[in-house]
Amino acid sequence: MKFTTKLYLLAFTLVTFVQANAQTTEQDSTLTITDKDNISRASVKKIDSVKPFSRRKADGIAAVIGDYLILDSDITKMREDAETQGVSASEITNCQLAGRLMENKLYAHQAMQDSTIVVSDAEISNMTDQQVSRMVSQIGSMEKLLDFYRKEDEQGLRDELFKINKERRLASVMQDRIVEEVEITPEEVREFFNRIPEDERPKFGDEVEIAQLVIKPEVPKEEEDKVVERLNEMRADILDGASFATKAVLYSEDATSSRGGQMTITREDPLDKDFKQVAFSLRAGEVSKPFKSEFGYHIIQLDKVRGQKLDIRHIIIIPKVTEKTVQEAKEKIEGIREEIVNGEITFDAAARKYSDEKETRGDGGQLINPKSGDTRFELTDVDPLIYEKVNNLEKGEVSLVLMDQNRTGQKFFKIITLTQRYPEHIADYSKDYTKIKELALREKQFDAIEKWQNEKIKETYIKINGDYKNCEFNSNWLKN
Image 1: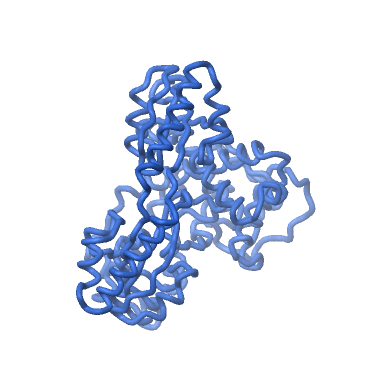
Image 2: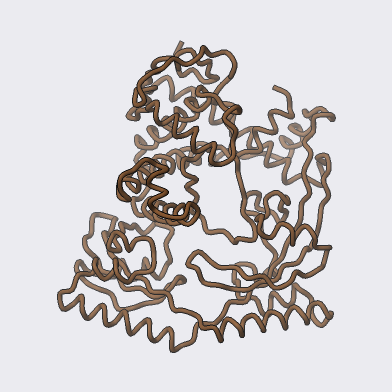
Protein backbone atom coordinates (compact mmCIF):
# COMPACT_ATOMS: atom_id res chain seq x y z
CA MET A 1 0.00 0.00 0.00
CA LYS A 2 1.36 3.45 -0.86
CA PHE A 3 2.11 5.69 2.08
CA THR A 4 -0.33 8.34 0.90
CA THR A 5 -3.18 5.82 0.93
CA LYS A 6 -1.99 4.32 4.18
CA LEU A 7 -1.80 7.69 5.89
CA TYR A 8 -5.24 8.57 4.57
CA LEU A 9 -6.65 5.49 6.26
CA LEU A 10 -4.74 6.15 9.45
CA ALA A 11 -6.25 9.64 9.63
CA PHE A 12 -9.59 8.14 10.62
CA THR A 13 -10.70 6.72 13.97
CA LEU A 14 -10.57 3.00 14.68
CA VAL A 15 -14.34 2.59 15.01
CA THR A 16 -16.18 3.36 11.77
CA PHE A 17 -19.66 4.01 10.38
CA VAL A 18 -21.67 4.38 13.58
CA GLN A 19 -25.35 3.89 12.87
CA ALA A 20 -27.54 6.93 13.53
CA ASN A 21 -24.52 9.10 14.37
CA ALA A 22 -24.65 8.19 18.05
CA GLN A 23 -22.31 10.80 19.46
CA THR A 24 -22.83 11.71 23.10
CA THR A 25 -20.02 13.92 24.20
CA GLU A 26 -21.03 17.49 24.78
CA GLN A 27 -18.89 19.78 22.65
CA ASP A 28 -18.51 23.49 22.43
CA SER A 29 -20.33 24.48 19.26
CA THR A 30 -17.34 26.53 18.23
CA LEU A 31 -15.57 23.36 17.20
CA THR A 32 -17.43 20.38 15.84
CA ILE A 33 -14.90 17.65 15.16
CA THR A 34 -16.07 15.47 12.29
CA ASP A 35 -14.71 11.97 11.66
CA LYS A 36 -16.13 10.78 8.35
CA ASP A 37 -14.84 7.34 9.15
CA ASN A 38 -13.67 5.17 6.28
CA ILE A 39 -13.59 1.41 6.09
CA SER A 40 -10.51 0.28 8.00
CA ARG A 41 -7.77 -1.59 6.24
CA ALA A 42 -8.68 -4.67 8.30
CA SER A 43 -12.06 -4.93 6.58
CA VAL A 44 -11.50 -5.68 2.91
CA LYS A 45 -8.52 -6.44 0.74
CA LYS A 46 -10.16 -5.99 -2.66
CA ILE A 47 -13.35 -4.19 -3.50
CA ASP A 48 -13.64 -5.10 -7.19
CA SER A 49 -13.26 -8.85 -6.96
CA VAL A 50 -16.74 -9.86 -5.84
CA LYS A 51 -19.51 -11.33 -7.94
CA PRO A 52 -22.71 -9.30 -8.49
CA PHE A 53 -25.16 -9.71 -5.65
CA SER A 54 -28.20 -11.86 -6.32
CA ARG A 55 -31.71 -11.02 -5.10
CA ARG A 56 -32.43 -12.39 -1.64
CA LYS A 57 -34.81 -11.98 1.30
CA ALA A 58 -34.64 -8.59 2.99
CA ASP A 59 -34.17 -10.17 6.42
CA GLY A 60 -31.90 -13.05 5.43
CA ILE A 61 -28.90 -13.81 7.64
CA ALA A 62 -25.71 -12.55 6.02
CA ALA A 63 -23.37 -13.79 8.75
CA VAL A 64 -23.15 -15.13 12.29
CA ILE A 65 -20.33 -13.91 14.55
CA GLY A 66 -20.34 -15.62 17.93
CA ASP A 67 -23.65 -14.69 19.60
CA TYR A 68 -24.48 -12.01 17.03
CA LEU A 69 -26.39 -12.15 13.76
CA ILE A 70 -25.82 -9.84 10.82
CA LEU A 71 -28.96 -9.49 8.72
CA ASP A 72 -29.08 -8.36 5.11
CA SER A 73 -31.22 -5.48 6.37
CA ASP A 74 -28.41 -4.46 8.77
CA ILE A 75 -26.11 -3.92 5.81
CA THR A 76 -28.83 -1.99 3.99
CA LYS A 77 -29.34 0.26 7.03
CA MET A 78 -25.62 0.79 7.41
CA ARG A 79 -25.43 1.92 3.79
CA GLU A 80 -28.37 4.30 4.28
CA ASP A 81 -26.79 5.78 7.41
CA ALA A 82 -23.47 6.23 5.63
CA GLU A 83 -25.20 8.01 2.76
CA THR A 84 -27.05 10.34 5.15
CA GLN A 85 -23.63 11.30 6.50
CA GLY A 86 -22.45 12.30 3.03
CA VAL A 87 -20.68 9.12 1.90
CA SER A 88 -21.37 8.34 -1.76
CA ALA A 89 -22.87 4.91 -2.46
CA SER A 90 -20.22 4.39 -5.14
CA GLU A 91 -17.46 4.71 -2.52
CA ILE A 92 -18.47 1.63 -0.52
CA THR A 93 -19.41 -1.95 -1.39
CA ASN A 94 -21.57 -4.43 0.46
CA CYS A 95 -18.42 -6.46 1.13
CA GLN A 96 -16.85 -3.50 2.90
CA LEU A 97 -19.97 -2.89 4.97
CA ALA A 98 -20.23 -6.58 5.88
CA GLY A 99 -16.55 -6.61 6.87
CA ARG A 100 -17.03 -3.57 9.10
CA LEU A 101 -20.12 -5.09 10.73
CA MET A 102 -18.32 -8.39 11.32
CA GLU A 103 -15.47 -6.54 13.03
CA ASN A 104 -17.91 -4.71 15.33
CA LYS A 105 -19.76 -7.95 16.14
CA LEU A 106 -16.47 -9.68 16.95
CA TYR A 107 -15.46 -6.86 19.30
CA ALA A 108 -18.88 -6.86 20.99
CA HIS A 109 -18.92 -10.67 21.28
CA GLN A 110 -15.48 -10.77 22.88
CA ALA A 111 -16.42 -7.88 25.20
CA MET A 112 -19.38 -9.91 26.43
CA GLN A 113 -17.01 -12.78 27.26
CA ASP A 114 -14.74 -10.46 29.26
CA SER A 115 -16.11 -10.02 32.79
CA THR A 116 -13.92 -6.96 33.36
CA ILE A 117 -15.72 -4.99 30.65
CA VAL A 118 -18.88 -3.35 32.00
CA VAL A 119 -21.22 -1.13 29.97
CA SER A 120 -24.10 0.17 32.07
CA ASP A 121 -27.65 0.44 30.80
CA ALA A 122 -27.80 3.97 32.24
CA GLU A 123 -24.95 5.10 30.03
CA ILE A 124 -26.64 3.62 26.95
CA SER A 125 -30.03 5.07 27.91
CA ASN A 126 -28.53 8.54 28.29
CA MET A 127 -26.77 8.15 24.96
CA THR A 128 -30.02 7.09 23.29
CA ASP A 129 -32.03 9.93 24.88
CA GLN A 130 -29.60 12.56 23.61
CA GLN A 131 -29.44 10.87 20.23
CA VAL A 132 -33.23 10.86 19.80
CA SER A 133 -33.50 14.49 20.91
CA ARG A 134 -30.79 15.54 18.47
CA MET A 135 -32.30 13.62 15.57
CA VAL A 136 -35.80 14.96 16.22
CA SER A 137 -34.33 18.47 16.22
CA GLN A 138 -32.52 17.81 12.95
CA ILE A 139 -35.33 16.05 11.09
CA GLY A 140 -38.19 18.20 12.38
CA SER A 141 -40.53 15.83 14.21
CA MET A 142 -40.79 12.42 15.84
CA GLU A 143 -43.22 11.32 13.11
CA LYS A 144 -40.64 11.98 10.41
CA LEU A 145 -37.98 10.20 12.42
CA LEU A 146 -40.18 7.12 12.89
CA ASP A 147 -40.93 7.11 9.19
CA PHE A 148 -37.22 7.32 8.33
CA TYR A 149 -36.42 4.34 10.58
CA ARG A 150 -39.60 2.49 9.57
CA LYS A 151 -40.82 2.23 13.17
CA GLU A 152 -44.43 2.26 14.33
CA ASP A 153 -43.81 3.96 17.66
CA GLU A 154 -41.18 5.83 19.63
CA GLN A 155 -40.49 2.97 22.04
CA GLY A 156 -39.70 0.64 19.14
CA LEU A 157 -37.20 3.18 17.82
CA ARG A 158 -35.64 3.67 21.25
CA ASP A 159 -35.33 -0.10 21.74
CA GLU A 160 -33.52 -0.50 18.42
CA LEU A 161 -31.21 2.45 19.04
CA PHE A 162 -30.46 1.14 22.55
CA LYS A 163 -29.43 -2.21 21.08
CA ILE A 164 -27.28 -0.54 18.41
CA ASN A 165 -25.67 1.84 20.89
CA LYS A 166 -24.90 -0.88 23.43
CA GLU A 167 -23.28 -3.06 20.81
CA ARG A 168 -21.31 -0.10 19.51
CA ARG A 169 -20.19 0.83 23.02
CA LEU A 170 -19.09 -2.72 23.76
CA ALA A 171 -17.11 -2.74 20.52
CA SER A 172 -15.53 0.61 21.35
CA VAL A 173 -14.53 -0.48 24.87
CA MET A 174 -13.08 -3.72 23.49
CA GLN A 175 -11.02 -1.80 20.93
CA ASP A 176 -9.79 0.54 23.64
CA ARG A 177 -8.78 -2.47 25.72
CA ILE A 178 -6.79 -3.92 22.80
CA VAL A 179 -4.79 -0.74 22.18
CA GLU A 180 -4.60 0.74 25.68
CA GLU A 181 -1.07 -0.52 26.28
CA VAL A 182 0.22 0.27 22.80
CA GLU A 183 2.83 3.00 23.09
CA ILE A 184 5.30 4.49 20.66
CA THR A 185 8.79 5.85 21.20
CA PRO A 186 10.29 8.97 19.58
CA GLU A 187 12.62 6.69 17.63
CA GLU A 188 9.67 4.73 16.22
CA VAL A 189 8.03 8.02 15.20
CA ARG A 190 11.21 9.07 13.39
CA GLU A 191 11.48 5.69 11.64
CA PHE A 192 7.83 5.92 10.59
CA PHE A 193 8.35 9.39 9.12
CA ASN A 194 11.58 8.46 7.35
CA ARG A 195 9.85 5.49 5.66
CA ILE A 196 7.49 7.86 3.88
CA PRO A 197 8.84 8.84 0.44
CA GLU A 198 9.20 12.62 0.18
CA ASP A 199 6.70 12.85 -2.66
CA GLU A 200 4.10 10.93 -0.64
CA ARG A 201 4.32 12.80 2.65
CA PRO A 202 0.92 14.07 3.83
CA LYS A 203 -0.18 17.63 3.37
CA PHE A 204 -1.72 19.27 6.42
CA GLY A 205 -4.45 21.82 5.75
CA ASP A 206 -4.75 25.32 7.17
CA GLU A 207 -4.73 25.16 10.95
CA VAL A 208 -5.59 27.68 13.62
CA GLU A 209 -5.28 28.12 17.36
CA ILE A 210 -8.33 29.70 18.96
CA ALA A 211 -9.17 31.17 22.35
CA GLN A 212 -12.60 32.19 23.59
CA LEU A 213 -14.12 34.22 26.39
CA VAL A 214 -17.59 33.24 27.59
CA ILE A 215 -20.12 35.27 29.55
CA LYS A 216 -23.26 33.49 30.77
CA PRO A 217 -26.41 35.36 31.81
CA GLU A 218 -26.95 35.08 35.54
CA VAL A 219 -29.96 33.21 36.82
CA PRO A 220 -31.73 35.49 39.30
CA LYS A 221 -31.96 34.05 42.81
CA GLU A 222 -35.73 34.47 42.76
CA GLU A 223 -35.88 32.17 39.70
CA GLU A 224 -33.83 29.52 41.49
CA ASP A 225 -36.07 29.87 44.54
CA LYS A 226 -39.16 29.34 42.35
CA VAL A 227 -37.69 26.13 40.93
CA VAL A 228 -36.81 24.80 44.39
CA GLU A 229 -40.32 25.66 45.61
CA ARG A 230 -41.91 23.82 42.67
CA LEU A 231 -39.78 20.74 43.32
CA ASN A 232 -40.63 20.82 47.01
CA GLU A 233 -44.33 20.92 46.12
CA MET A 234 -43.90 17.94 43.77
CA ARG A 235 -41.98 16.05 46.45
CA ALA A 236 -44.76 16.68 48.97
CA ASP A 237 -47.38 15.42 46.50
CA ILE A 238 -45.30 12.30 45.83
CA LEU A 239 -44.87 11.61 49.53
CA ASP A 240 -48.67 11.90 49.80
CA GLY A 241 -49.10 9.19 47.16
CA ALA A 242 -48.84 10.98 43.82
CA SER A 243 -47.00 9.21 41.00
CA PHE A 244 -43.38 10.26 40.57
CA ALA A 245 -43.46 8.93 36.99
CA THR A 246 -46.46 11.10 36.11
CA LYS A 247 -44.80 14.19 37.57
CA ALA A 248 -41.67 13.44 35.53
CA VAL A 249 -43.64 13.06 32.29
CA LEU A 250 -45.47 16.35 32.90
CA TYR A 251 -42.72 18.54 34.28
CA SER A 252 -39.19 17.15 33.89
CA GLU A 253 -37.08 19.05 31.37
CA ASP A 254 -34.94 16.31 29.85
CA ALA A 255 -35.26 13.33 27.54
CA THR A 256 -35.94 10.81 30.33
CA SER A 257 -39.31 12.46 30.98
CA SER A 258 -40.95 10.26 28.34
CA ARG A 259 -40.00 7.23 30.48
CA GLY A 260 -41.24 8.79 33.69
CA GLY A 261 -37.74 9.90 34.57
CA GLN A 262 -36.52 6.32 34.83
CA MET A 263 -32.77 5.60 34.83
CA THR A 264 -30.42 2.81 35.85
CA ILE A 265 -27.06 4.07 37.11
CA THR A 266 -23.77 2.89 38.60
CA ARG A 267 -21.03 4.78 40.40
CA GLU A 268 -18.85 4.56 37.29
CA ASP A 269 -21.35 6.31 35.01
CA PRO A 270 -20.24 9.67 33.59
CA LEU A 271 -22.90 11.66 35.46
CA ASP A 272 -22.73 14.84 37.54
CA LYS A 273 -20.92 13.99 40.80
CA ASP A 274 -23.57 15.69 42.97
CA PHE A 275 -26.30 13.76 41.19
CA LYS A 276 -24.57 10.43 41.88
CA GLN A 277 -23.80 11.39 45.47
CA VAL A 278 -27.46 12.10 46.23
CA ALA A 279 -28.71 9.00 44.37
CA PHE A 280 -26.40 6.65 46.26
CA SER A 281 -27.30 8.20 49.62
CA LEU A 282 -30.99 7.28 49.29
CA ARG A 283 -32.83 4.27 50.68
CA ALA A 284 -35.28 2.28 48.55
CA GLY A 285 -38.50 4.28 48.12
CA GLU A 286 -36.98 7.49 49.46
CA VAL A 287 -37.40 10.78 47.58
CA SER A 288 -34.55 13.29 47.82
CA LYS A 289 -34.93 16.93 48.68
CA PRO A 290 -34.27 19.35 45.78
CA PHE A 291 -30.59 19.69 44.98
CA LYS A 292 -28.48 21.47 42.38
CA SER A 293 -26.26 19.92 39.69
CA GLU A 294 -24.37 21.58 36.85
CA PHE A 295 -27.49 21.18 34.69
CA GLY A 296 -30.30 22.36 36.96
CA TYR A 297 -32.27 21.38 40.05
CA HIS A 298 -33.42 17.79 40.68
CA ILE A 299 -35.35 15.47 42.90
CA ILE A 300 -34.63 11.73 42.79
CA GLN A 301 -36.59 8.68 43.91
CA LEU A 302 -34.74 5.40 44.48
CA ASP A 303 -36.87 2.53 43.18
CA LYS A 304 -34.58 -0.46 43.65
CA VAL A 305 -31.00 -1.46 44.47
CA ARG A 306 -29.64 -4.20 42.19
CA GLY A 307 -26.12 -5.02 43.30
CA GLN A 308 -23.94 -2.15 42.12
CA LYS A 309 -26.81 -0.64 40.10
CA LEU A 310 -29.61 1.69 41.15
CA ASP A 311 -33.00 1.92 39.47
CA ILE A 312 -34.07 5.53 39.99
CA ARG A 313 -36.47 8.15 38.72
CA HIS A 314 -35.61 11.82 38.56
CA ILE A 315 -37.10 15.19 37.69
CA ILE A 316 -35.00 18.13 36.54
CA ILE A 317 -36.14 21.74 36.21
CA ILE A 318 -33.77 24.33 34.78
CA PRO A 319 -34.03 27.87 36.19
CA LYS A 320 -34.62 30.42 33.45
CA VAL A 321 -32.63 33.53 32.81
CA THR A 322 -34.55 36.76 32.26
CA GLU A 323 -34.41 39.25 29.41
CA LYS A 324 -32.74 41.63 31.82
CA THR A 325 -29.90 39.26 32.74
CA VAL A 326 -29.42 38.28 29.09
CA GLN A 327 -29.08 41.94 28.16
CA GLU A 328 -26.71 42.53 31.08
CA ALA A 329 -24.51 39.62 29.95
CA LYS A 330 -24.42 40.98 26.41
CA GLU A 331 -23.48 44.46 27.59
CA LYS A 332 -20.79 43.00 29.84
CA ILE A 333 -19.08 41.06 27.08
CA GLU A 334 -19.34 43.99 24.68
CA GLY A 335 -17.56 46.12 27.28
CA ILE A 336 -14.85 43.48 27.73
CA ARG A 337 -14.38 43.28 23.96
CA GLU A 338 -13.98 47.04 23.78
CA GLU A 339 -11.30 46.93 26.49
CA ILE A 340 -9.38 44.29 24.52
CA VAL A 341 -9.69 46.08 21.19
CA ASN A 342 -8.55 49.38 22.78
CA GLY A 343 -5.48 47.67 24.21
CA GLU A 344 -6.51 48.17 27.84
CA ILE A 345 -6.21 44.44 28.55
CA THR A 346 -5.01 41.39 26.62
CA PHE A 347 -7.43 38.69 25.54
CA ASP A 348 -5.52 36.19 27.68
CA ALA A 349 -5.81 38.34 30.79
CA ALA A 350 -9.45 39.16 30.10
CA ALA A 351 -10.35 35.48 29.75
CA ARG A 352 -8.58 34.63 33.00
CA LYS A 353 -10.37 37.50 34.78
CA TYR A 354 -13.87 37.47 33.32
CA SER A 355 -14.69 34.22 31.47
CA ASP A 356 -17.47 32.05 32.90
CA GLU A 357 -16.09 28.94 31.17
CA LYS A 358 -14.08 27.27 33.91
CA GLU A 359 -12.61 24.64 31.55
CA THR A 360 -10.69 27.25 29.52
CA ARG A 361 -10.44 30.23 31.87
CA GLY A 362 -7.18 29.11 33.47
CA ASP A 363 -5.49 28.88 30.06
CA GLY A 364 -6.59 32.33 28.93
CA GLY A 365 -9.49 30.85 26.96
CA GLN A 366 -7.25 28.60 24.84
CA LEU A 367 -9.23 25.73 23.30
CA ILE A 368 -7.86 22.18 23.16
CA ASN A 369 -8.63 19.97 20.18
CA PRO A 370 -10.19 16.81 21.69
CA LYS A 371 -9.21 14.83 18.60
CA SER A 372 -5.48 15.48 18.87
CA GLY A 373 -5.00 16.76 22.41
CA ASP A 374 -3.11 19.85 21.23
CA THR A 375 -4.20 23.41 20.51
CA ARG A 376 -4.34 23.21 16.71
CA PHE A 377 -7.59 22.84 14.76
CA GLU A 378 -7.82 22.27 11.04
CA LEU A 379 -10.15 24.86 9.57
CA THR A 380 -12.27 22.04 8.15
CA ASP A 381 -12.94 20.93 11.75
CA VAL A 382 -14.43 24.26 12.77
CA ASP A 383 -18.21 24.49 13.10
CA PRO A 384 -19.58 25.70 9.75
CA LEU A 385 -21.71 28.26 11.61
CA ILE A 386 -18.61 30.22 12.65
CA TYR A 387 -16.10 29.01 10.03
CA GLU A 388 -16.32 32.27 8.12
CA LYS A 389 -15.75 34.31 11.26
CA VAL A 390 -12.68 32.31 12.24
CA ASN A 391 -11.32 32.15 8.69
CA ASN A 392 -11.55 35.92 8.26
CA LEU A 393 -9.82 36.77 11.53
CA GLU A 394 -6.24 37.97 11.53
CA LYS A 395 -3.87 36.82 14.26
CA GLY A 396 -4.77 38.66 17.47
CA GLU A 397 -8.04 40.04 16.08
CA VAL A 398 -11.18 39.68 18.20
CA SER A 399 -14.51 38.59 16.76
CA LEU A 400 -17.79 40.38 17.26
CA VAL A 401 -19.97 39.10 20.11
CA LEU A 402 -21.50 35.71 19.24
CA MET A 403 -24.55 34.09 20.84
CA ASP A 404 -24.49 30.33 21.52
CA GLN A 405 -26.36 27.85 23.70
CA ASN A 406 -25.51 24.69 25.64
CA ARG A 407 -27.22 21.32 25.29
CA THR A 408 -29.99 22.30 27.72
CA GLY A 409 -30.81 25.33 25.58
CA GLN A 410 -29.38 27.97 27.92
CA LYS A 411 -27.99 30.92 25.98
CA PHE A 412 -24.62 32.53 26.51
CA PHE A 413 -22.32 34.97 24.74
CA LYS A 414 -18.71 34.64 23.63
CA ILE A 415 -15.94 36.34 21.73
CA ILE A 416 -13.13 34.47 20.02
CA THR A 417 -9.66 35.38 18.90
CA LEU A 418 -7.15 33.78 16.57
CA THR A 419 -3.95 33.21 18.54
CA GLN A 420 -2.04 31.53 15.70
CA ARG A 421 -2.49 30.48 12.09
CA TYR A 422 -0.57 27.71 10.30
CA PRO A 423 -0.88 27.75 6.46
CA GLU A 424 -1.30 24.54 4.47
CA HIS A 425 2.03 22.70 4.20
CA ILE A 426 3.75 19.38 3.56
CA ALA A 427 4.43 17.44 6.76
CA ASP A 428 7.57 18.58 8.54
CA TYR A 429 9.03 16.32 11.25
CA SER A 430 9.95 19.06 13.70
CA LYS A 431 6.93 21.33 13.16
CA ASP A 432 4.33 18.58 12.95
CA TYR A 433 5.76 16.04 15.39
CA THR A 434 2.47 15.68 17.31
CA LYS A 435 0.49 14.86 14.16
CA ILE A 436 3.16 12.49 12.85
CA LYS A 437 3.32 10.75 16.22
CA GLU A 438 -0.46 10.30 16.09
CA LEU A 439 -0.24 8.68 12.64
CA ALA A 440 2.64 6.44 13.71
CA LEU A 441 0.80 5.37 16.87
CA ARG A 442 -2.35 4.69 14.90
CA GLU A 443 -0.42 2.42 12.54
CA LYS A 444 0.94 0.49 15.52
CA GLN A 445 -2.57 0.26 16.96
CA PHE A 446 -3.90 -1.10 13.67
CA ASP A 447 -1.20 -3.76 13.75
CA ALA A 448 -2.23 -4.71 17.31
CA ILE A 449 -5.89 -4.88 16.31
CA GLU A 450 -5.17 -7.04 13.26
CA LYS A 451 -3.14 -9.45 15.37
CA TRP A 452 -5.92 -9.63 17.99
CA GLN A 453 -8.57 -10.00 15.33
CA ASN A 454 -6.84 -12.89 13.59
CA GLU A 455 -6.39 -14.69 16.91
CA LYS A 456 -10.04 -14.25 17.96
CA ILE A 457 -11.43 -15.24 14.56
CA LYS A 458 -9.82 -18.67 15.02
CA GLU A 459 -11.60 -19.31 18.33
CA THR A 460 -14.99 -17.72 17.53
CA TYR A 461 -17.91 -19.40 15.77
CA ILE A 462 -18.29 -17.64 12.42
CA LYS A 463 -20.58 -18.46 9.51
CA ILE A 464 -20.75 -16.38 6.32
CA ASN A 465 -23.73 -16.87 4.01
CA GLY A 466 -24.75 -16.20 0.43
CA ASP A 467 -22.81 -13.88 -1.83
CA TYR A 468 -20.66 -12.69 1.08
CA LYS A 469 -18.72 -15.96 0.73
CA ASN A 470 -17.30 -14.44 -2.46
CA CYS A 471 -15.86 -11.37 -0.74
CA GLU A 472 -12.09 -11.25 -0.35
CA PHE A 473 -11.57 -10.01 3.18
CA ASN A 474 -8.18 -9.05 4.52
CA SER A 475 -8.97 -10.90 7.76
CA ASN A 476 -9.67 -14.61 7.49
CA TRP A 477 -13.42 -14.44 8.16
CA LEU A 478 -14.02 -17.43 5.87
CA LYS A 479 -11.38 -19.47 7.78
CA ASN A 480 -9.97 -20.86 4.56
